[in-house]
Length: 146
Image (cartoon, rainbow, N blue to C red):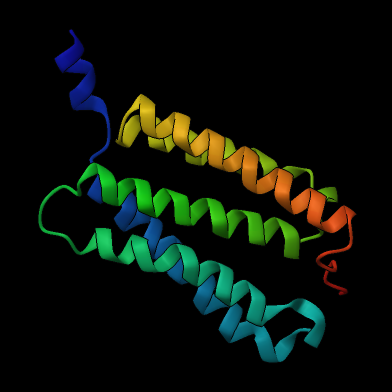
């Protein structure tokens, strides 16, 4: 029974391939639409945040065999950093809907790697978000004006 369920789970390389194409589309859209929108849209920051997640996804997408657990963990940790920066640039601690995406990344860690990886991602996500909120509250980093 467990083997049947395991066969239904997506392969990690297919997930990262789809993720790469989605993130690449976001990068292309930001770059193509930049001349048509306000200069205060933070296109450079959005490009940087997306690139943090695109590079590991590309690396895992081009692998011929299934990626190792350590590479999956590294890619998902990069996703957490990119998401935290995206939340910061998108309005900071007041950006309530961005926090939901942490759960998606933690879930992917559990499905594609292991429960231990999921626990690690959970701990890192809490640490990153708490640090971002504290840094904004204490004035260590300024909220982007847009």
